[in-house]
Length: 168
Ligand SMILES: [Zn+2]
Image 1 (tube, rainbow, N blue to C red):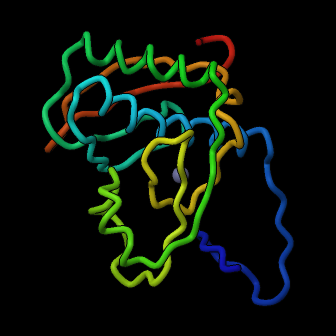
Image 2 (image 1 turned 90 degrees about the vertical axis):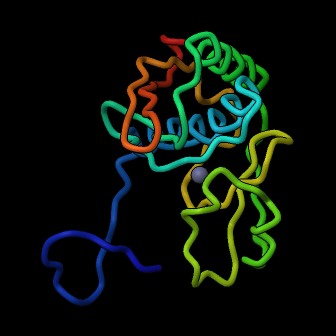
């Protein structure tokens, strides 16, 4: 396994330790982000196209296109909380990269062109999304979801959000 990092590291053996509390929060936020791609598409009736995301504080997702209506944003948030409560399984599959063209995934435009195989993730029986990130096993673990704000950005809009038991 190769880890990329900033700064200087002595060549040779290295040992790593996972900061589990932060890691688990990022897993929840990241899985919630995949689920929001789906919930936004369901609430707006249009495919979502992702531009990027940030899982630190404050967590946000960037989408291409014009900003959804406030009522659509709230509908997506409501759907997301319903799917979290349902405890949908999060599953994986590895496929030849050429198959990804047929997936019509929200991050299709951002996939590395050199990849021969892609790891796909799927929440419940929703769309398969190419992703190498870490996810929770069940949406129940996300606890709850809240959209904290929406701002226009260059070429799209940014949704600030957070997850957890207390905010569902
Ligand atoms: Zn992912």
